[in-house]
Image 1 (tube, rainbow, N blue to C red):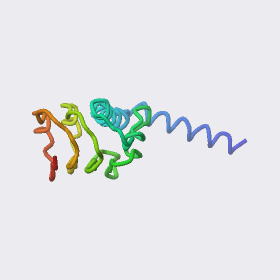
Image 2 (image 1 turned 45 degrees about the horizontal axis):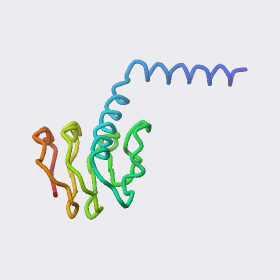
Image 3 (image 1 turned 45 degrees about the vertical axis):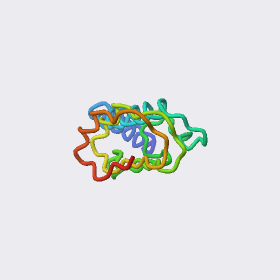
Image 4 (image 1 turned 120 degrees about the horizontal axis):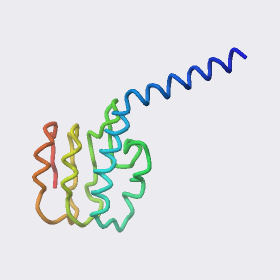
Length: 126
């Protein structure tokens, strides 16, 4: 009986944390939405973006995406992926992005001015 009370208490605490601080979930979903927007605007003949599932809590489990300890995207590695299409302004929402590697693809069009919001960007390799 004590075990059941303890498990119920733990569940209540966990749910309370989620309800009181849902920002981590919204932030991760925002980054996932931004990357999924990129995916939707790219032609991916080799299915390198097949793991980019917008229904997951965050994009940190997606291939070619690296996150920090706070589950925030810091790196996107899509060089030599045979992708074509164009960049999307939503990439400017990846506030902690440090590396955006898109070299040796066929990505065309202008670089969105929103990428100027990426103040932590160390490398942009197009």
